Amino acid sequence: VQPGKIGYLMASDYVTRLEVPEQLDRAHGDIHPGGNPHVHLNPHHMLVITPQLTKRLKQIDSNNASFYQQHSDAFMVAWQAAIKQWELKARPLNNMPIVVHHKNWVYLSDWLNLRPIATLEPKPGIPPSAAHLENLLSVLATDRAKAIIRAPYEDPDPSLWLANKTQIPAIELPFTVDGNHQATDLFSLFDNTINTLLKVNQANDH
Image (cartoon, rainbow, N blue to C red):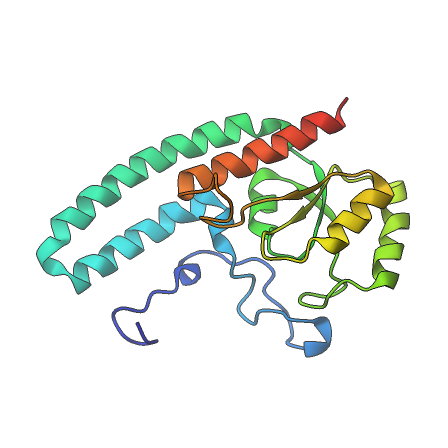
C-alpha cells in the first residue's frame, strides 16, 4: 500500500478536484496543494473511482477477477439508480444558504448547489476565534443561512454558539461512512445527509 506500489490507489487522483490553490502559502491556512481531497461527497465521483478500484483489485488478486467485476457491475447499476433518486429528492435544497465549520463540504455543495455563505474557521484548519464568530453575526444578519453544518469530529461549541445567537439550526452531518449510526454504508451516507438537510430546510420555510 506504499506510494508507487500496486496496492496504493489515491481515489481523488481520478476526478477533477475543486479549490486547487493558485499559490501555496501557509498564511492562507491548512490548504491542500493538490486541491480539496474530500471528493467522496459527490456521488458522481464513485462512477469514475469504482472502475479504477475494480481494475486494481483484479491486478492484485487476478484469481478472483470475475468476482470483483461482478460486484462492481452490480454496484454501478444500483449506484446510478440511487443518484437519480437522490437528485430528484434533493431538488428543494437548490441554492440553500449554509454556514460550514470547515471547507470539507465543497463537493456536496457543488453537487446539490448549496450556497455556503460563511465558514466558522477564519482560515482552513484555524480554530474559530471569538472575533471571527462575532463578525459572522453581522454577515448572517443580512444574508441568513438555513443551517450551520459540522462533521462529527469537529468541535460543536462554535456552531452551537452561533446557533444560539442567530436561531439558525446547527446540524451534524455524517461526512463519511459510520459518521453516525444511520450512515452504515455509502448508500445510507447520502440518504441520511439529504434527509437531514431536507428536514432543516423545510423547518426554515415555516
